[in-house]
Amino acid sequence: MPGRRGWRGSGGSRRRINRFLEPCLLLLLHRGESYGYQLLENLERFGFSDSPADSSTIYRILRSLEDGEFVTSRWTEGDSGPARRVYSLTGRGDVYLKMWVKDLRETDRILHCFFSEYSSHMELHRADENGRN
Amino acid sequence: MPGRRGWRGSGGSRRRINRFLEPCLLLLLHRGESYGYQLLENLERFGFSDSPADSSTIYRILRSLEDGEFVTSRWTEGDSGPARRVYSLTGRGDVYLKMWVKDLRETDRILHCFFSEYSSHMELHRADENGRN
DNA sequence: TCCATCTATATGCGAACTGCACATAGAAGA
DNA sequence: TCTTCTATGTGCAGTTCGCATATAGATGGA
Image (cartoon, rainbow over the protein chains, first blue to last red):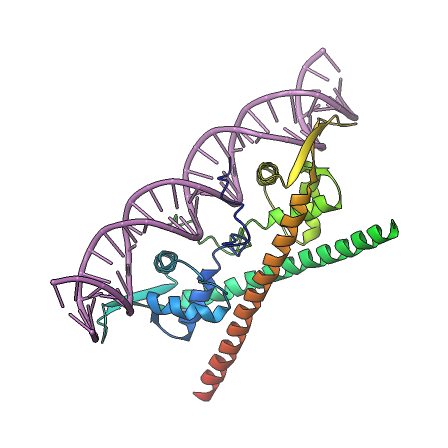
C-alpha cells in the first residue's frame, strides 16, 4: 500500500521536477561563489511560492555536486557567525549546467505536449457534452 | 556516497518531472477506458522522444491510482490475447487530473522563471566577457 | 505437436531522492 | 547565562523507479 500519504491534499505537492534544485544551485554558483545558507535564501528568485526546500536537501545536493567535481569547496572564517563552506563552480560544473538547461527545455516541450493534448481533448469533450443537450 | 551512477552521461536522464506519467495516464483514461499495455503504447503521443517508461512503472501507477480510488478496474476476456485489466476514470480521478494540470502549470511557471534567470544572467556574463577584451 | 513470439500483467530488488527530526557549534545580544 | 541566529550536517523512513525476472494465455509457423 503506497503510504496513504502520497495523496496529500493540494498542499505539499510532490508533482515537481526531479532534482530541480540542482540546476538552480548551479546557476546561482555561476554568478559567483557562495555557501549553503546563503544559497538557500537566494533560491527565492526562482519563483517557488513557498519554501523551496529543506536545508538538508541543499547541503546534500552541494556535497553530491562536489563528489561529481562540478563544484569545489573551501572553508572560510566568517567575519561574523560560524565558519562557512564556500562553493565555487568548476568548468565541469559549467558544462553540467548547460546540460541541465538543455534537458529542462526538453521537459518544457513535453509539458506543453501534455497541455496541448489536455486542451484539445477537453474542448472536444465539452463540445460533445453540449451536443448531447 | 550517492551512487556514482547519478552522473550518467547525457543518456538516461533523471532530470524529468516527478511522477509525470501519472497525469498522462489519467488524461488517456479521461478519453475512455483502457488497459496497461495499450496505455503504454499510447503514451507516445506525449512527445517522449525515447521510450517513456518501463511497463512495470505503468502497472504500478495504475494500481496506486486504484488504491486512491481515482480509477476502477475490471477484467475482460480479450477477443484476442490474454485477459486484460481494464481501467476507467472515476469522478475523483477527474478532479485529481485537474489538480495535476494546475500543478503542472505552476511547474511550467517556475521553469520559465529559471529560464529567464538563466538567459538574463548569461547575457550579462557574455557582455562582461566582451567588455574585458 | 512443438516452439518461438506476441500480448498482458505483475513482483523483487536495489539505488536514489526527499522531508522531518535532530545534532552540533560558534557568534551575538539581552 | 540564556536565547536566538547563523551555519552545517546526520539518521531514518517513506516513496519512486529502472532492471531483471516470472507467469501465462494466444498465435502462427515448421
